[in-house]
Length: 143
Image (cartoon, rainbow, N blue to C red; front, side, top):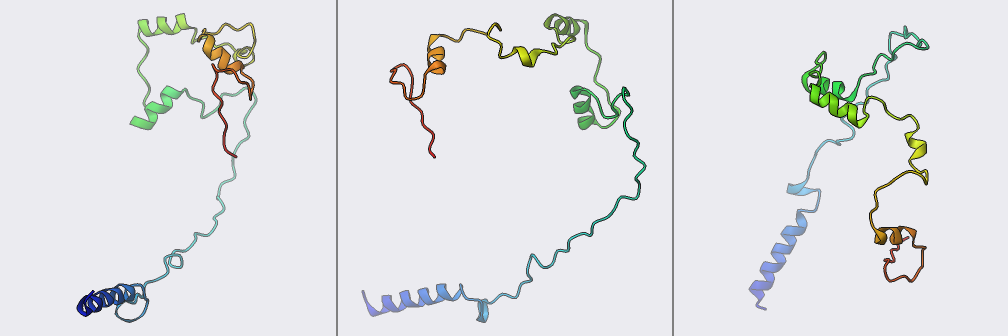
């Protein structure tokens, strides 16, 4: 390596390292970004005239999901269009108007009918950890 190449390499290295310093021509005098913002003081709300809810009274914010979505998109006071006769018939046939209040308790009941996903899935679900059945895969989560 020639002396000219070494001198150029040393000059480039010195110039590059000088950019890392905070003094001289590359020094910065910037404000601290955490010191310029002020925290807002706590403000006590001026009105405490909130009435407690009455038993049996309708909830003031209770609306269905479709109405909430319409109001979020198009502003307050907008109501969804009424359902057509075909849509209402479909919902009635599906039982949407009369939800089952015991659905959560009967979901895990052994007498509940479920869709048969096949014998392989049942074998995988019923497999015990550490079994050597070739039909099931051994999965371990790192810990």
